[in-house]
Length: 258
Ligand SMILES: Cc1cc2nc3c(=O)[nH]c(=O)nc-3n(C[C@H](O)[C@H](O)[C@H](O)COP(=O)(O)O)c2cc1C
Image 1 (cartoon, rainbow, N blue to C red):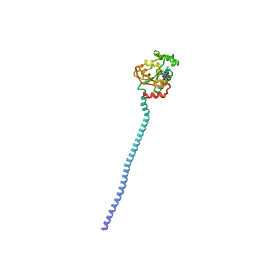
Image 2: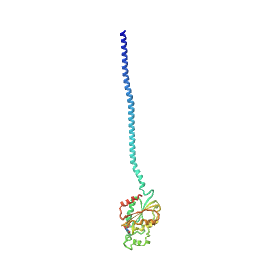
Image 3: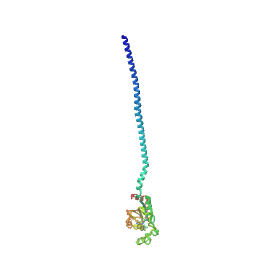
Image 4: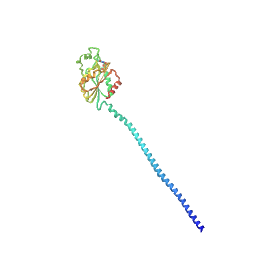
């Protein structure tokens, strides 16, 4: 009996031990593989692949977008800068909104005309030459001769009404800035310009006198012309040496901030 019980007991223990080993091995291998597989594949692949993929794609797309934005903003700023600059600067470079500039000049021997041309270059203005019907010859201009034409006109104001080829400027109404140039004769504006000033209406226009001379200043020349015109907003004006340089003239024009 004892032997039979011991045999049955040992047989039960052997089955029990065999079942435990099998279950442990099976659970361990399944648990480990499934858990590691699911964790790895799920967590890693999801987190890694999705996060790294999304991060990468997001970063790359973001950085791509950023660089594309950058490049857009760079290229757009590069592209737009000149446009903006030119758009911004163009209107301020114009004399005034929608207005045009005229340089009207009388010059007996070329000095004042050269200044006028410098002003034209600096402003893009139109040039209008005030020309006597009977031009002054060098003999006419000989102020050392008491009988020369200019000396007689100087001595007798009634002779200063110099006939001009024309005083009419095409599209006069389009100009809102008018430079008026002349040489100084005996301390005042060469009276050849008087007829032009008297014949035109300067209402609504800014008028800027300029002159050349050997040594005299602008003096009252601009003021006297303004009185003669009776209209327009006359600025102080500027005297130049007979052979003033283009740079000097351009500097003055720039200072006017037209
Ligand atoms: C009749 C006459 C009078 C002049 N009177 C003066 C004068 O009073 N003061 C002066 O500095 N220069 C005087 N000048 C010199 C001129 O103003 C100067 O040479 C001027 O640049 C000439 O300009 P234009 O070449 O445009 O005619 C006179 C010249 C002439 C012909």
